[in-house]
Image (cartoon, rainbow, N blue to C red):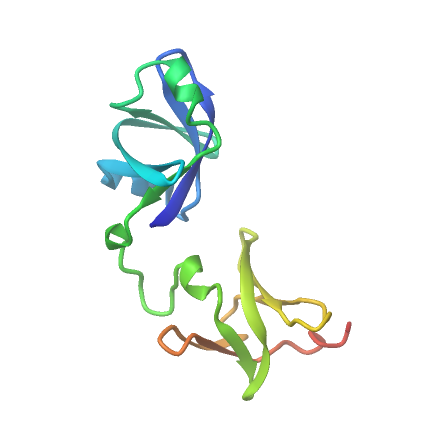
Length: 168
């Protein structure tokens, strides 16, 4: 299951929910009929009936949620889709969940494991955890830096910008 949104609060008295999109394309929700919501140890299927946009959030209504009291129980929960519902990405584009955990190398020298992707707006930044008390590396997700990504081998090859390792 892939997280695609976080329910932040209720909206109105009819059970609508305010959702923060965790995807690059919030319009993607319009292509979905149903999503899953984590409910304890199980995932509950809920049916989307309405989507409106409000600044950086979505206002969503669901068939199964009838009023504000019921909607309150969903606050703070995540929305998921099945991996089979993912869109195919263009070449050299990757889902964040596929990148996290990759081993990162420069010229066959192991730098660490990609532990997080920071979305800055202009370009993503990869956080590479080095272990042994060393500071994390922050690597810009630029074509001139990221030379190759091999999801099958769980490996990323990079060419660090000058000065990246100087502040250790």
